[in-house]
Amino acid sequence: MSVVTWRKAHRFFGLAVTAVVAALCVNASAVHASPGSAEDGRKLYLAHCQQCHGLDGKGDGSASAYLMRRPRNFTEGLYKIKTSQTGWLIPRDEDIFGVISNGMSSSGMPPYANILTEGERWSLVTYLKSLSDAFGSEGNPPALDYSNPVAYSPDSVQRGEKVYYRLKCVECHGPEGSGPASKNLKDDYGEPIWPRDLTRPSTFIGPYTPEALYSRVTNGIPLTPMPQHATVGGETLSAQDRWDVVNYITWLKDEAETKRRNWTIAFAATLAVAVFIGRAWITRLIRTMVNIGKPVQRD
Ligand code: HEC
Ligand code: HEC
Image 1 (cartoon, rainbow, N blue to C red):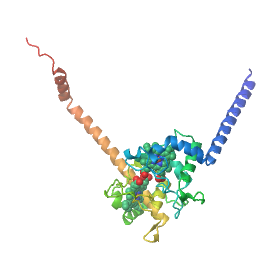
Image 2 (image 1 turned 30 degrees about the horizontal axis):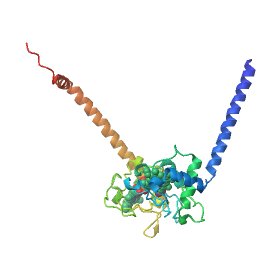
Image 3 (image 1 turned 120 degrees about the horizontal axis):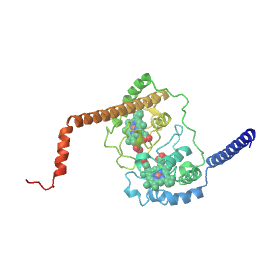
Image 4 (image 1 turned 90 degrees about the vertical axis):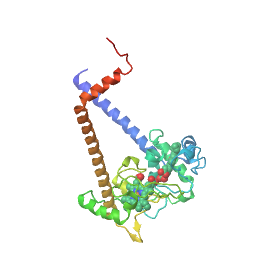
């Protein structure tokens, strides 16, 4: 094969691969766009979810008694992760889809992104919504307005610290964010609940992005004592205050992580120095231990 023919063949092969990948992507986005059928969702629900959430979705599955947190009762239509515009009680479809995909880290709700296809997860969203009258025929609520975020800066962090104290975040989450400053909180079912440690994002029940934090501060966490902050004491809290406090809790997390890293380094360094200084003594100790139980030689 001449070089020219080889190049042509190569280009043709490249185009063919691109066409196949594009076709697959079109197919994937078609699945994403489809809301999924409630009937498919029901079958998946019975296979994967009813053990915890109960046959009728009331949160009373056979495994629920063994969990630290009560699985959601879907017939109430109340969800903790809600990024809907203020005034809407129901979450957005994307919120429910996000929880099914990513789980709720420290709370016992597992992630299904690697177990169920995107289409299957959307069918579950349709099915869960069909379990509560709260969703009615109003459609998907509009998302919160994230269009004017306040960028992370020392000024914003300083303002955010004042908001953190003025809105009493400190009373529940503690001065360093690592809470729980307030240990006697109960959720709407009368069960004990702890304010999240704001310095450990891996324990969060929702995603950790500035927008997600902004939505959690704005809408609060329904069913728990974590309050909404769209209005406080009858006054509308400015979007700037909410972005500033998001920047402040991000700073608290960065500070705590730096402190933890420095402690680990200091501990490792101290251990290394101790081993170096005491190595003769440690060698003698190990020899003694190895010799324990061996018969003593007599001349
Ligand atoms: C091992 C038990 C368990 C299984 C299995 C389980 N869940 Fe959950 N789920 C929970 C718990 C516990 C919560 C409540 C967590 C909390 O309140 O912090 C929860 C909460 C939820 C929420 C509420 C989200 C919110 O914003 O309030 C949704 C939606 C959900 N689960 C969907 C599902 C679906 C769909 C399945 C099956 C594909 C499923 N769960 C399987 C334990 C489970
Ligand atoms: C009355 C107590 C209380 C106050 C005041 C309060 N919180 Fe919370 N907060 C909670 C509780 C309880 C949770 C845990 C809810 C859960 O795990 O379901 C929480 C959770 C959170 C989370 C974690 C979200 C996640 O995805 O897990 C963030 C972020 C947060 N609070 C920020 C704030 C900020 C900022 C303020 C002040 C503007 C504030 N909180 C005020 C009690 C409080």
